Length: 292
Image 1 (cartoon, rainbow, N blue to C red):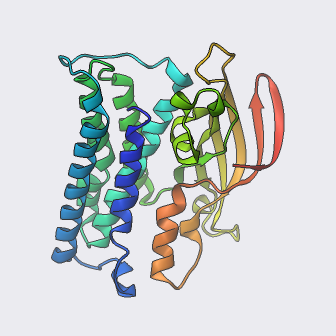
Image 2: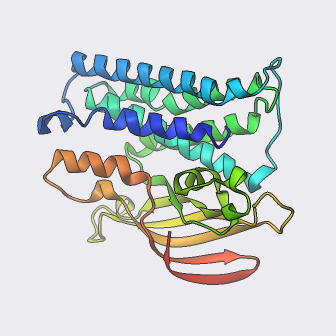
């Protein structure tokens, strides 16, 4: 999946999630049984959202490049696999959005997993097919594997624990690289947050309390390990991997009496909370007092 297409993915993710936030407070409560009107609203919203996203992506991105016969492209060694982390993350959260939306409608857990949790894999694989017919790129098997990994992490935990004890999260900080390579890494903060892999970090955040539910450990406190890269600026400069450890917050574990606030916390729980972090890279350790 190309950097620019992430705009469509994120718009689809947030747009579909926030589509359910425009009503009275009781609207945010999950239905105890199947609510056909809600289910119909979910299906229509997701179908229209996906259709608009794919049509927009085709017109705004692929239309500018020549088409070709379907072909494959191996990009597994590019960006030190940061793009694959993005695929895994996007597939996980689009699937989670689909699953949560069906849960809100009162759909059965089985159908939440079959028709909701697989939404990310299906949506991103369609985009990959678009790539396959573009002369500029091609269908990447590595991308599809990463899409499947994100969906697998989501569904696997639901089957094993009926909850997400391990969550994929994202953080970003601006770097100096885009000022020299704007076309590749972005011209403004929004573009850079999607295109400048040097400033992105993908996290695996584990909720410790979920493994010790009879303890007094804070329900909301997580431990996170992160992965990032440095040195990708469009030149032949040195590139290297970065590994992080930090604390995090599971916003969904914060007690609140507001169904609306709980929904907001659930939507924005994909963000890793800025916190102290320990970095390991190039055989050295570095401490960050506050890492974004």
